[in-house]
Image (cartoon, rainbow, N blue to C red):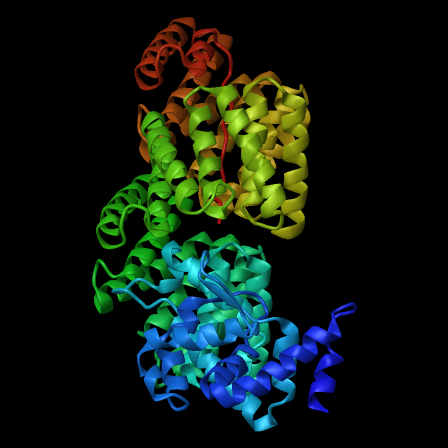
Length: 612
């Protein structure tokens, strides 16, 4: 009856004679090799996809089979059991890719012939085999964060559902499941990570209780995926709840590494919500705790340092970010190696810092190296690779190589549309592409793209989110370029006022918007107002960045034009000559901004909001 029941599961058109032959083979094998039958029973609760021989020839498999055959205490002897299954055509062994595969009908027949208790035990044994197969933690680096371990996680993942691992009551298999959620997030499979994490959390909340430490850690990892999908409000609410529960739990508390990881997530949520100052304060607190508890070189301390630099960059302190990222990069290279994704993340951030500081050539060199290595270590279309490609394209454009920048940015934009259409990083790439079009004189395309981005951000993030305002500051320049001076001025003054309130009068976003508002005022003949704004903006640029930063010199070049229009020719010429000379020194004689300054063409301010 059991065999007949199993045969009913055969796919349409499957030869029944083959299934019956298998059933006869079971009976022969049951007498000659009980260990082979037990292996087959275990394989019935793996996926019908190929099973890595690392799991088959494992210490755990040998231990489980040794009670059926004492010679199997040595895992090398497991091979004779595999050969028995292969000989009876009950398993297909592929030595080329080191896998073994059991047909789904064989699995069904074997499972049908087992008692409910036997099936339960076999499932649990598979949970232990899968847990044993998890890559070990080497040093302090999390195994999920090292690409060298990802192929093994890939091999484990298909067998989770067939083995009903989510139902396991042991701590180690549950930790494996949480690791797989983090792994999927690291691989950029955000929706899959979110779905798996939520499904596990719903089950564990019933079986373990809402305050269980493992459940809370799972939820914090799931919130990473939520944030990466741009759902910042939900991620913040969930992370705050998890953080409060972790702090209150006696077995964890506020200093535990899991709690500090949740705090890091909260900092990222605050950034997504545009609450930059709060994020800085939390990230500084988290970094100090990580450093005090675990030391400077602990990977989670280095991650906290990375987050702190990110916060400094967001509030406009690019030189502080540069110092931290430079030191973090050195430490990560020493601790994790030059090709580890977290090391490459620090290199990417350093490239961004160098650009913010006006060192465009160094930025391009750093980002080219990083992009090339990301492509080799991960993939050309991995999320991290695309993010770096976008940053590289911005630096290439800043260096004055507009055509190359546009080509690279177009490729990157297509990559996001294809692979990560819901990524919160996508709008920053779109805006950077709009600036590429504007640099090449296609103001209509730039205007159209920026307007669509601004409308989407106003809807999704809010009209006064700093990133929405950043896009608006660029939109002012594009409106001005197509001749809509009044509309540009209205938007510019509204945006300038909002940026001053949200980020402060001397934030680089605010100062870039000030340049564009001054240009609009000059276009409309309000020259005294333009000059007043340009002088105050120039002083702020000199204080916040430096006297020789390209943004400072762009503002200075515009001021020289306004002075000439006001009839102050001598001061204008002296300022223009000095500015042009400095721009040549900083950017090179052939840079387009040098030509703009020399020809008395107004230079627009631009902002670049951060990818998340």
